[in-house]
Image (cartoon, rainbow, N blue to C red; front, top):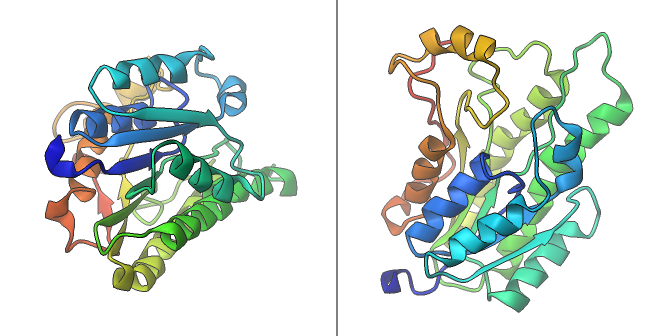
Length: 257
């Protein structure tokens, strides 16, 4: 752990113990990174999966047992001042962050026949605006010579169509474009910017019917789990990945659409 020299990682969207965000936090904590996580339980309570409101605090206790510093806050990323508030709070509680994982996302099912401006705006505020502004604030406050890392979570929008998820596919697709351009802007600051597409991942939302449908599409014969993408992110934020930037990496076990 001492080899990491007290590196601090921010992970957004960590409401559920079964989620990708929690898996990322666990992998990074086990590697010795200090963790600052955010969550927004109001969103998850609207979704079909089950959620206990104390899950983020349970995760915090679990991470603390790994011997790292951990802090967290509930934050509505749709608010204008949320990105700056988050970065300032991290600096106050843990110090200047080295790593930002933009994991938070807003997703509902919709298509051309029922999409509304209100629903599209909700997707945009979290998936695009918050990600862009938080990444920008992170870079503005970055005070190291090198070693900065931004990892965005995308969903393979350019791997194939996503019927029934028009707003989500549109807004998350923008993250690929952000990743490529921002990586060029931030390279002189010593910050890499990459995106990860986890593919279909069982975080508790999959029914048995969905699993049966998806499983044959994975050549390894199993559904993706949160730890799969978390391990990829652990590599991307490490010193070994300092020559990788501007990439959209499909960490989805050879999933064939």
